[in-house]
Image (tube, rainbow, N blue to C red):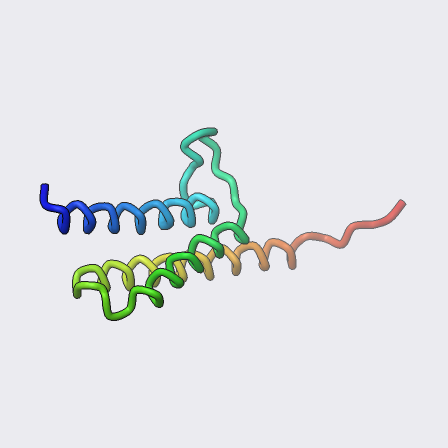
Length: 101
């Protein structure tokens, strides 16, 4: 395998790692280690932020295909993140206030 192809495959794999982590932390997919669906929106935001940072830092050094994949993945993650934050906020609003004994 040519070095350029190897690096491109590794690049796409790196994007997929952060994408998977974000989706897992949003509770969209189960944790592969525990087989449980868990949610940590702060960690999901961190994974999205890492991808955004990479995209900004690599601007001008990406092929059209790489830029398109980056953009598509980030758009999908942002939409899913907003969806989960909205759900979490509506659940908090519906919870009755706790009463102190």
